[in-house]
Image 1 (cartoon, one colour):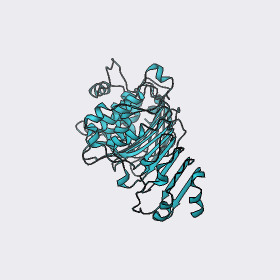
Image 2 (image 1 turned 45 degrees about the vertical axis):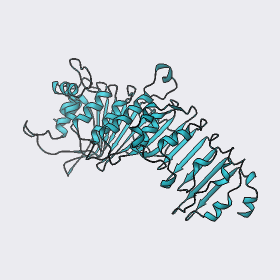
Image 3 (image 1 turned 30 degrees about the vertical axis):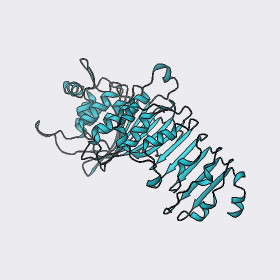
Image 4 (image 1 turned 90 degrees about the horizontal axis):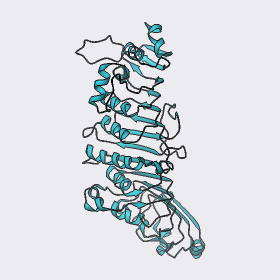
Length: 420
């Protein structure tokens, strides 16, 4: 360290990885200016010290890359105007700026290409309801190619609403519900995403067209949406890893919500339907929501869908959704799918339905006053009514009740004759 300190003015790249608590004796020696420092990374694996002084006397005019993980230093006191990469992770609470103050700092980083914020900012609930938010000017990050934000819902919404980024920027968002989160808060985020991806014809030339959608839900309060520019990017039974980049994924959103305040189906379907998805031909749903409202609203928004895959969990009542009947028309109209013409059928271009490890009910059909059970017979009957005899149904490792395993591949019009 003594040798290093003597030559700080010559250092261009410095990585410090502390295996335990951040050593204040080491940091205290890094007080001299570092005018040539371009790449600084400090990572603390365990614990945090009470260090709070600025490093390098704040003189880091050449700094291009700054990556801090669990690091107890006031990062915002560096000279940041030349940054191209900013990565902040698990910052101590005392170094988490308010969103309004962070935006002011971000306005000085016009050359940013990579911005990653993981548990690095305070909640923006107060900022969203303030006059400062409604009157704030957009910050233009013209060179940004990757954006990752893991933060409270209000913070994600505020940042995404106040920043302009290029059409081809890959975006990962992970937002968690806050104590007073309401359905309106999720609607505000959906509106911000819609404005970002609803481009004019001129802007659309520089954007990635969304062609595939993966919806993954859970029963423990989270949902994940992956919007992909790749055709048929839905075949795996698991979603694309959270941190995987470079797969032409313009947007990946993970939403953690309080089920007692907002419904899972409401949040996910509203976010899907806020996006321009006219180019989507492939949809993969993992652990399918059972709500008919979710399916009618979502599939009503994806009228060019050709490929639908369901993986794992119980079979939703797709028989009521995919059949060609007056009930489908009426249900679609009630859920504001649009002005359905006579003979309307949801996802009229559907050519392939794949069910992977999906469980059917083995019960007999109930009385008309009861809730319909999801049997293979009802699904087969519904598909046979569609105007697409070339369509195919594929079942892989599906179960009927607790005993019978079902694997098959049939065309729409061949289903009844084969299983009648």
